[in-house]
Length: 78
Image 1: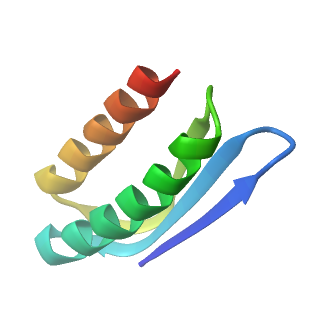
Image 2: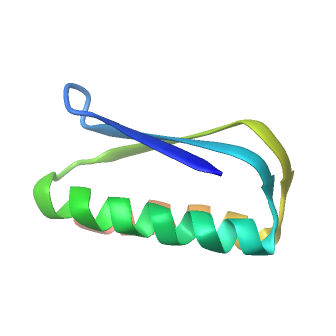
């Protein structure tokens, strides 16, 4: 599960991941995150993104790939 909250003051998207980030859950989270990012990156430059993984029980390699792709996407927009 993914919860994202955008803070206008700090220009930061805080994303909290919950549960298992296995293949299927990672793909669902990636779709949700990409939709949110596309909207925010259109409107805001120098966007910061923070991932909270404190409630994640398991991480698959596909989740790590998603994290790296997100970092690259944000950096390219800066």
